Length: 184
Image 1 (cartoon, rainbow, N blue to C red):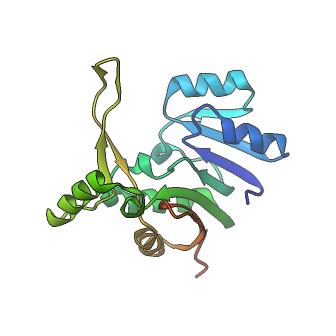
Image 2 (image 1 turned 90 degrees about the vertical axis):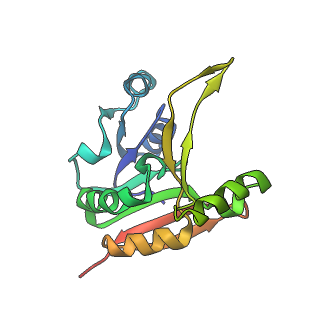
């Protein structure tokens, strides 16, 4: 589905960037974590930047790629419009943004559904979560993540100048969306 010059957003260790390079695509990988950038360079990703996507001004790109729950970095639904507007500026006129997310209402078990219901009762968006890493009784700092349901993404994309199609949808709530710039 990727074509042309690709920007891999939140590229991590570069798994997708490397696969796309092997298919002959020109790939620019970006991640905010310096260690990820080091690993990508060691693995052979050719063009790598350590930067926050909201401060990145490269492009234009034909394909923006945000996979492995690519909207978690947005952190809150309130930040999604600015994020989508910024990505619109990085995209060429015939470009696309491929992003996956999870509709937590479809993937959650009873315990998480109770939490999501409580968030809705409190007037909060159910896809805004606070998480914390824990390993061998050591806890990291709290961090925020955003999971966006399909209907909300379609609506928010439209207001930010994108058309949004859900191209893959799984029973567990995971989906892949393809956003393309609206032509005015």
